[in-house]
Image (cartoon, rainbow, N blue to C red; front, top):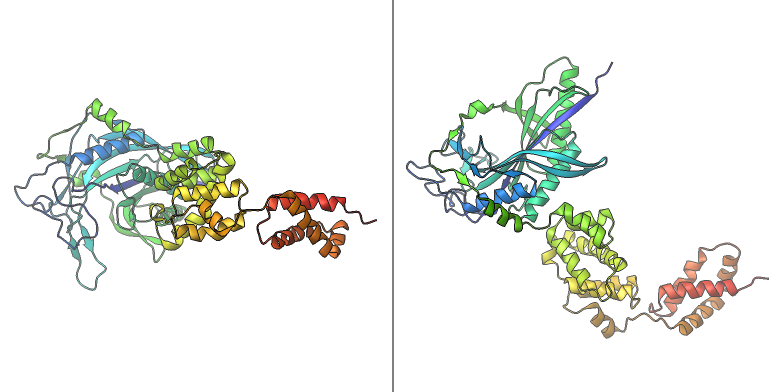
Length: 486
């Protein structure tokens, strides 16, 4: 009888923090500088050089803990994590081990089955290592600019049960980090790196299987693909009668498979011991309260509020709330409306999600770089909502709004684009079109009701595109109903 396997997944995410300087020295923590220029005796591990803790590292870690429902330790300590690697000049990494600053939290993801809590074991502070560069046509080179850059490591409980859930968890985690403005979330530049611990077990059993760890996954897609592959690989190993070996793996994106890097390390391999050059970190209740008061509204809460306050569908709310700046843009545009209401709010959402996001994608820019202000967007929506112009005309003048600082109202006045809503004029135009297209009228009365759209289009054409389409539609129906084919 075939065995039905269940994957058990936990993620370890390293987030590089947006501090100006490194974790334990004053060197810049900026990305993209020439190799080995952002260094000093402290981050290079010179004898006698003493570390000094960056207070923002502590504040950012606490903020992340509060945003993910963690308990915050009043006192925590640093340890030395010892291992040899060419890009680790001290031969150890300053990290936290026994008493991480944040612990026992959770993060909520939305699955097809509903909301799910993924537990967080810990969030701890540490410094980054340097970077070994292997892909040049020379020997391996080392850039130590990154050595000592502040990180938080966010370790989940093994609560994730699929590659898709892992994707959703990582996406939610990244959104929170960006909303807090403590990490830029750029996986390509290494600001966010993910290691996945994966095992499988027969469904219904309580004991975990032997896990492997896939290291340094640098994109959402790679996380999902690597986990999917490793799950299938482990199931194949077990069904072949073999045993999964606890290895550290890497994801080979070109071959679309995992490969063995080395035998999996255990905690004792790192020979942790207390960092003798740093005193314990003390976080008072007053500091925690102050940092809690600085937290912004987080993406999940903002999504729910957008649905309730603005009447938006879940899809719109999720897209708009995913980016804090985009969400602010939407709300600013809504605040500028002359006649606010849920129908107008939906129109604002429609414009942002179609035209604005399209331009942002084409030009590879953020909403803050978009050359149309929320007020201009609001004026365009107002003009469509109150019938001043049609949606078609709105799309025609949209490029002009992008190229100027004028509002839609100003453009409409300058170009005489206001919709004509005089019922007498429209009724006369309808009658002229019906007379001119008597054959189509006859076919309509014989059952080809789709011809009504053609006739409405002819009226709008005759009006030079200024006739109010909604009014034309109503008057057209009235006139067609009056016509008898007897």
